[in-house]
Length: 177
Length: 105
Image (cartoon, rainbow over all chains, first blue to last red; front, side):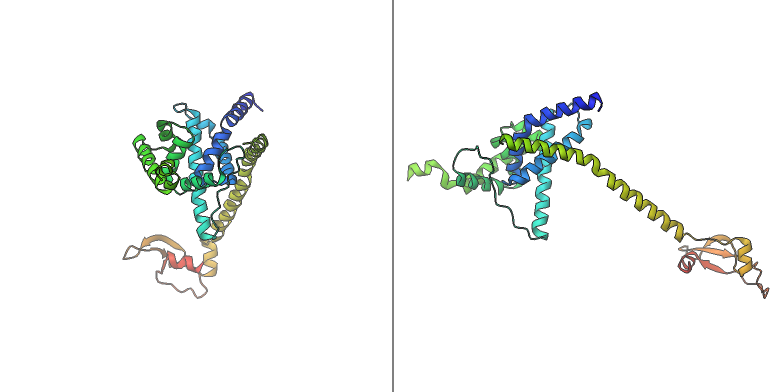
């Protein structure tokens, strides 16, 4: 193997190690809580990134570039899942949280996961990127290929929708009662 | 992810990257096969214009040119009247539409 290929493979290996967990986590949120699908989406994104390393332009951060690939892969997965469910009559998968190290009530987590999964795609992406994965609004805009104003609008609406669906979980309501 | 999940993830990713490099070869073989089949089809269905001697021996008129018909929507062959048939009849010009010729062949 040529030296440049060895160096490239080594760099890519380091990149995977640095972003693997976050990639799978983000994919999990974007595909509605399906662990197997999330791993598949993350792997496909890494593979596309590896193949596209030669075309990567240094204008953007590599992580931003990679997460944009990941978001596109998640969208592709959801489109095909939609087709399979309608053509083959496949039942939608129940969200399965295979992360053993996440604290908290599993039932509550599932309910929140489902609520986020039911958001319209743009709102779900914006919410997952900013509030769940910790990207800045600007980074979320770069990753999803949308304007900053659009991301802010999606965030505002996502929060409104989630508050409406999860209103009974508001601790302030209990205090009033 | 647990350490085991990470190990499995990395191993599977490595395998997929390796397989994706090999995956293009079957498609190249399919593409080459399709190209060969198409070439055969094109060669088989092309119009063979008989040579002058052959045409004369079987009494087939030879094309002398190509014109369009009156409406301009079809190409027709202007056929020569010079044929060497047994009866040595002088045939009037015969116009055969290219489309009919294709059907006959």
